[in-house]
Length: 276
Image 1 (cartoon, rainbow, N blue to C red):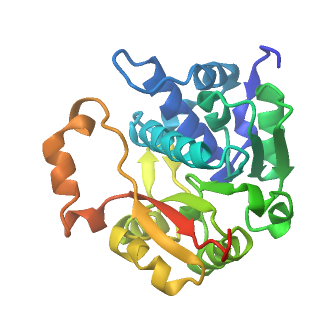
Image 2 (image 1 turned 30 degrees about the vertical axis):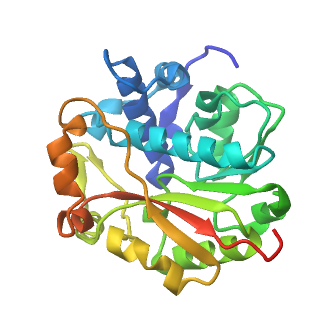
Image 3 (image 1 turned 135 degrees about the horizontal axis):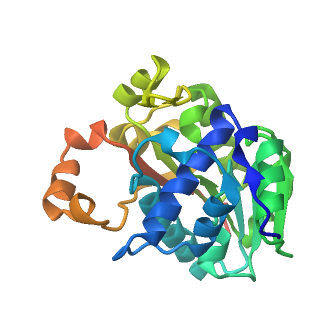
């Protein structure tokens, strides 16, 4: 990995959103008093030549989501230390390095232009395998050993897929990886509808359409709808700074009405085979 500048404008559409989340993680990591530390994201953000201001003001949404994923992976690895982590639509996430676990097998699955950028920017790791393909291309499923445990991350991915694609992918993951877990985040229906009409994040940037939305209540019903899904747990991000750390706002957001109007994070556990 060199320190040469790289042009981020080669990414567009959904692929370019990885620059949005990278900027937010880097900004939060540099903020005094933040509980989120991602020095590698800071370095990547500086190396990529891009007009980050087009994404509007930085938000704590993505760094807090990243912290939630870190905690979920660590908890699974504590019980399944030989497990494989599969990061679907990984973009420029730096989860592997934040975990500090070079002993785990890691699959990074994303579109070829994004994998190319990851390869040019991130340090090579002997236990990390890059797969230049869509998350919907099931070939990646042949690599992990289900008997050792599999943790799948769909961080920042499912909202860009169609509903039948998401449900089919979850069902096949449950069938192929009994005892595994799947982490994903969702947007509410009202926000999904807004993106379908053209959601302008700034005067110079319109977010890609996000056709899939899922509320907290809808996610809780997935075990009854998809064979092999044993449980669906809503994960609460750690408190952030200022309003993001308000106990009052967190209590309000957990009430039956408001909770279905906000973004959410879900952790699915797949049923284990008998004797597993």
